[in-house]
Length: 177
Image (cartoon, rainbow, N blue to C red; front, side, top):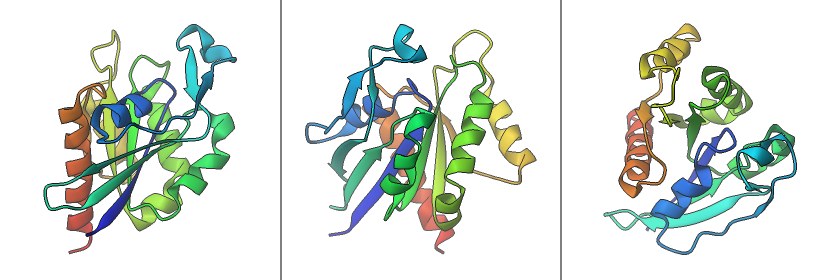
């Protein structure tokens, strides 16, 4: 039985912990602590190490999901968590000041990892006033000669998280053929 390690990263509040909680077949491991910085007004807890969940695909393959902390002060954890990973899901919160720049920052920080694997972008809260469109995200990727699947998702919905995982698996299968 194959085991797949996928990394979920993204801006604080984008829904990484929520996505893992929504789809994990086992109680997720969480490392949340009280938020003490500028995020305290928007969320009471933040991930300080990682989140972990797992699920089984129809073919019996196990998927292990590792969620990174979103805040840049924990970026030293990102490469540690990514070791041995097969794919990356980047969640981008459209209620933040510059979601397109957020996406770019995570793609840049994971560029070595992305060079070895595949990535899918999940756009959350896309209905926020003034939110960039999916075309805006696509155009930003295209401007830097990147082409990744971009999906509008609600991380609270297991079906949406499953869509991200299936898109990542399809992308991985495409790049290996």
